[in-house]
Length: 116
Image 1 (cartoon, rainbow, N blue to C red):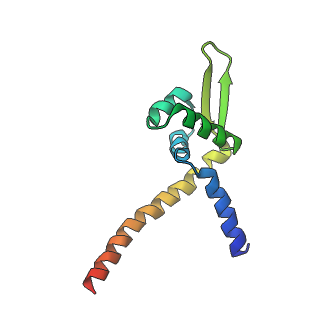
Image 2: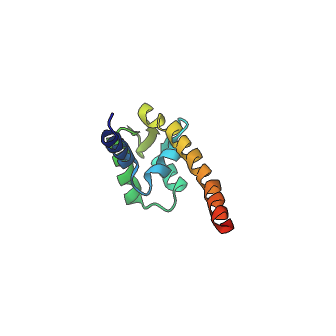
Image 3: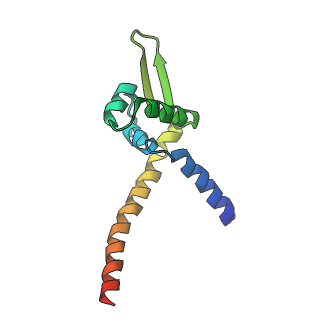
């Protein structure tokens, strides 16, 4: 794969995660969790109902989240990650570890520049 093709492919993958709330939704569903809409609302209290619904619909259309509607009164809707969505967990975990290594590297860089 050429560098341009690789950059484009990674850009497309990152575009799936764009949006202020998508990562918060995904992290709440990792580990096989199944949550109702109201549970996601409580887990992410800063998000509006409209935005939560939009982000869930987008994650569903992108194949990361599965929405299941139960024909009950009142209606019950549950969300879970698809197998493909769950497979993103190790990648995001690696990104977390990579980010954690940045902070000590930055402190070392600033100390080195102060010493010069």
